[in-house]
Length: 482
Image (cartoon, rainbow, N blue to C red; front, side, top):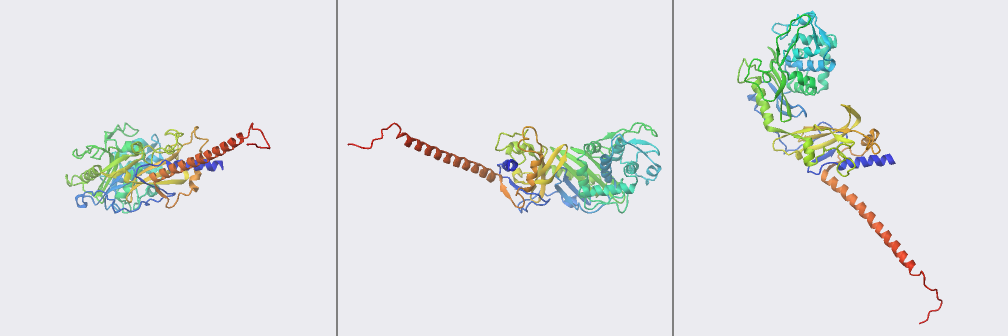
């Protein structure tokens, strides 16, 4: 009974911690990816006309939420060419330490097709994994891709299987890789959407971000090669490799690609004012075909559109300004908990991306408690809060359970199992104002009833006492005379 009361108290505090702003909130356990109700009044900015974009397919995606800000046939299949190497680099980082070494074989360095990008790797030459990463992402070295693929999986086919498995895990829908470098193969294809999803996953990794954003790298003398000339990043929006007019303010990296079958492909990462974007264009024109209508001008137009028409709302500042749902939980109706001691808290780096002019109060919150605890970065993730605007996911933050000595007597890891049995599933919806009002009114009524009955009890006791005192000390006469 005691444990039940403790859990009940924790849940009441959770419910009472939501905002008092006019932000609709919904608690669902669990929720699906497309639960937001349709809203005919919701609209998103229109991007550049499809005809003005020379690439056959294009997409702009928010790197944090996955919100698609622009789409032109993003699910059409195309040959990716060297933007394939984003996946190869990600798998290399995930499966190797930076100081591991790869020794290159004849089959990896001598069988490249004519004109394929390389760093003149020699048979028997040894490079560290870190050196391989810069060779792949900056110089687009095809032979290095083959070397790391063999090193990680034993052969190219097995590494391709690993690529395809990882592609499914990150949400790719129409992708099949058959090699690690993107040299042409009929069964090696992907889409602009899928490449954006792969890039979104890769950008979560700090090592990938560092490598992809490096303009120039140096490989010192090896066992088979003198120190190479500086390896320059081929992406002209980050580094003026062959053209200087395409440098883009806020570009943080990306990857170029070209084969005669794929034509030009380009993935670009950019950040301004906290908004991180991914732009992918496929089957586009190279600058040598047109200086004013190519993959770089396409990407510039698309990124400009997104930065100019959308803005980021930081959930941390929103908490302070509007008492929104994402404030550390259990802090609304009691001073026992504060932001440092609350056992339930939300991540402090959450963001919502919305069109300009749309207030954050227009976003709909949806709370999900997980069936099992997920451990991330040493924290117990027990649920999440997602934000939708119309049918689109526009933000997300995790709910953490962090017990400490101050509140161990009130809650523990075992207590959060109560969130799985409480009746909050289905269509239990409310506004924060109503819930807060109800909680306050119930508390007031309980206090008033307690005071009422307590006062009545005191009055009864006083009346009985007065009656008793009337007979104390008086003579008991049988006869009464007037």
